[in-house]
Structure formats: structure tokens, C-alpha cells
Image 1 (cartoon, helix red, strand yellow):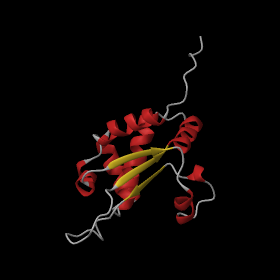
Image 2 (cartoon, rainbow, N blue to C red; image 1 turned 30 degrees about the horizontal axis):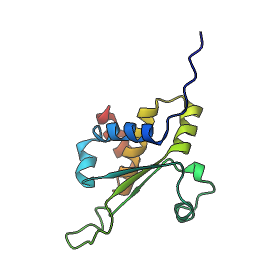
Image 3 (tube, rainbow, N blue to C red; image 1 turned 180 degrees about the horizontal axis):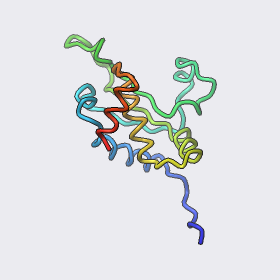
Image 4 (tube, rainbow, N blue to C red; image 1 turned 180 degrees about the vertical axis):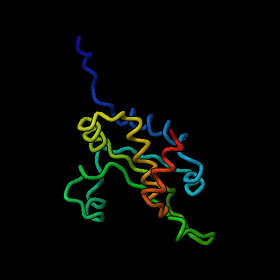
Length: 133
């Protein structure tokens, strides 16, 4: 018996999974972020695509935008809150290709975006991610 058809998760569902994942981000990363605003969009915008020298918006599943701890100081003027952008279509494409659990994928992308933004190595993030499981 085959599974019933289920439409692809929409923007609101991706956001719900991301909000759930925020609670599991290891304290070692969370202490650097403060309050994070989550934004879920279909794809990155053209400006981001050019800035990151992407061949296609399908290449980017997530992005952290904010002041990293190297540039952050008490005198730093923030014009916007730190944000994690998740890009629905590339996430769903990867999810379909790999069969990975969508929640796990979203949490992984979020942890890596935070970690890269604050200068953590891939090994550091792998360790921190294992703490979130």
C-alpha cells in the first residue's frame, strides 16, 4: 500500500520546523546569537546570489545575516536584528534527493549557518550538532 499524497511543506511548515529546531541549538552556539529572527523564503534574492557568487539560487539552503562576534562590540550600531534565512525550494530539493528527515536537515542547516558566521570549524560544528541530537 502506497503512502497517500502529501503536498510539499509550505513556508509556514518550514518556519514551524525551524522554530522547533532553535530550541535544540547547543548553548555554545546560542550564546553568540542573542535573539534570532527566522525568515523562510522560496529562494535567496538576486543580491545574495551575486554577493555569494552562486551559479544558481538552488545552491543555497540557508544564510545567517548579522554582526559576527569579531565585529560585534558595545559600540556596534545594529540596524537590523540577526537573521537566519532558510530557503524552502533548495531545502526541499535536497530533502527529496537524499530522503533525510526534513526537521534534521533544517536543524543541520541552521547550526551550520550560525557556526560559519561565528567562525566555528566544520569539526566544531559537527561536535556541537551531536550535542543537539
